[in-house]
Amino acid sequence: MNLFRSEEHVDRWLRGRTPGATIPVATLAALAEAWWSTRLSPDWRPRTRSESQAILEGLGLTGAFWRLPGT
Amino acid sequence: MDAADLELRQITYRLFVELGRGPSVVDVARALDVDVESVRQGGRRLHEAHALTLDSAGEIRMANPFSAAPTPHRVEAAGRTWYANCAWDAFGICDALHVDGRIDTTCPDCGESLTLEVRDGRPDDEDLVFHSLVDAAHWWDDIVFT
Image (cartoon, rainbow over all chains, first blue to last red; front, side):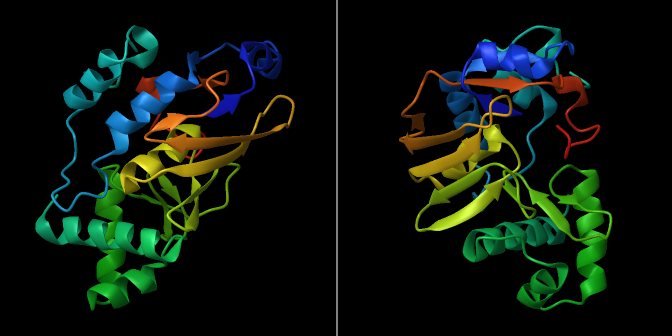
């Protein structure tokens, strides 16, 4: 899971491998905030898979690639 | 996940934040005033629950988003530095700490250094893109590779 200068850099780096998913860094930043902002909270408890899936879907990260196991 | 394992997890994260590196199992045992074997056993349960990741020696490898091992993703925030497990986690360190920060990483294609200032959760360079090679269903098959 890496940052790239542009989509062209991703394509060149793949060297023919099957691509995963590419998203704008702004979407990644929003995803990170939703995913990690409670990580150090004293009352932290594990999220359910459904809760995690809802975070992804809330940012438009839908489809088979973004489907967590067991959801 | 019982109260003792939650406390073990909390102490591990607290030490990561305070030390700017991954704590050893001995560090965690001292902080909790328990024996090392208790920490190892609890660590294995947390590893199975994906709440921590241990390495093959039973030491703490990840407390996501923090990495105990050096990675290409370095974060400076609140006057300290940490390694993140990936670019997603690099943002996550700022988010978990609720502070602004700076991410230093490299483009895996060209090797160019990429430095982002993160202010209120937003990067100052929005031209970059993020790529995940592994799909969500398989992120935890090999979390270090992911």
